[in-house]
Image (tube, rainbow, N blue to C red):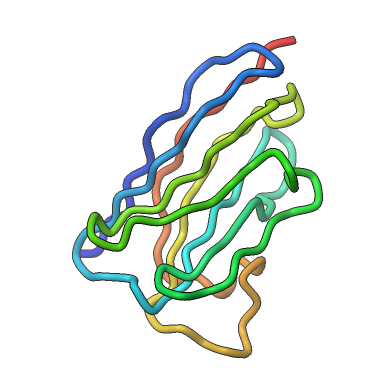
Length: 127
């Protein structure tokens, strides 16, 4: 059974930092895309960042460019999201997602690209 488990969320003051982790099990995703999405109450789930787990490109939402960094550890089958200079607007439940097989024509920032999803981890940024 494929599972994605997020961790690292919590409460932080504006301007602070957090690092989220997403550990995958059940299969490896070295040749697949891995992405981070987030959802705030009353809003649709939105793209945050994405990366290929082996030799791929990265992509970021405009709202987090320069502040967030996605990285991966293929040996641990884990991806990370380093979040710096956090703002109250970043408050959301953060979800990681992975695609089973790389589909060259599917965009990294599209929810429809991904086949597996974690349960999410709460990030709260106070003013």
